Image (cartoon, rainbow, N blue to C red):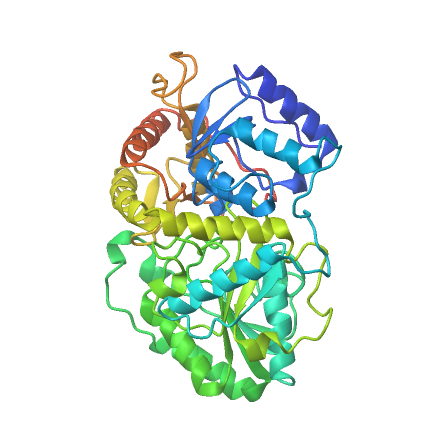
Length: 497
């Protein structure tokens, strides 16, 4: 059993880590050198049980796009579920409302939390709003039906089921190499590369631009799609009409945060159109503003047959969906895509609240303004010798900082040290918290992607002032690292990131 991580001055957090190390296997989570314990969250911040404040630069792995526990979003969510009276702002009034709903009894009337094999009005309204939204955005002409799921990998699985049912004998799937689509079934089969274990013989991989976009400095360079088209043509010449589906992420997330030229994704789509291949865009990480637009198909000038949504669409409530062509999604019969949690009222209410929140506030405008400032600051970190590249989504809110081998330490060690130093903070006094210099602000980051790339993905609602303060912490962390090269945090053998 792996020994639990301990940090000085964190008695409550260390106790939680120790107990959970006994109660849960390490496979429950990916390796992170901090193993943060979160007691409370609000907006762009987490707080540890000891009261230390951390900037959340993960958004709970690209989920809390609107920040943690926004009052207005929660108000909408509670109202759609029947927990709150519409347009009532006082929390105590909600308690009175629930008492009135129950008539003093032990239970009260509201929507159920699950509605397996049943229909609810909130699902009806959410479907209507989601389809109106997606079909009304540039590239959304094919958004006609919604197939709900409980997680991104389940939604990918359902998208592939529907595609294979629609194309019948065209059972082969193309996927972009080193993408991440999930760890279950067909979603796992199209994840990674042909060299991974448990490959499905129906799956073939095609290259994704990496060398051409390995740093922000190369973002606007000319791009030649010809080698990628040749690779696609070779597969078509080999397998022909056995190929029925192509699935890609708009940007390579888990593979190391590679953000391709528009011409690449548009070239994939053009190939699909020429050969009658269904084009699936996996936006589980990218939807609801992460690329600076509502959806990534807008950002990249695409018109997919199916779009897979998840993460940010529920702002913390587990929800995912496949949205796209009616004829494709209708290829599955009763029960062939059903499961216990799909299309439950919690999912619908959360998605509806998220749509309404984006429509009532300038979330995307704030995202783009903060994006420019944060990107400039992140790129400046390249002056440190252990950082070799910074990549990201122009106008969006996701980047990758790539570390390199330096002074005898591997890139993975430098990446993990950066995560740890950002967590420990710079020793400065909290600005919005208790005036206690013993509790410095820190930054919460996840374990490295592809072993050496640290993802930066705060909520879209982060302010310019918060960006500036977080960059100070990051820069101080890097400065400390230049004097601690002999005390690196190794990555456990075999750790999956």
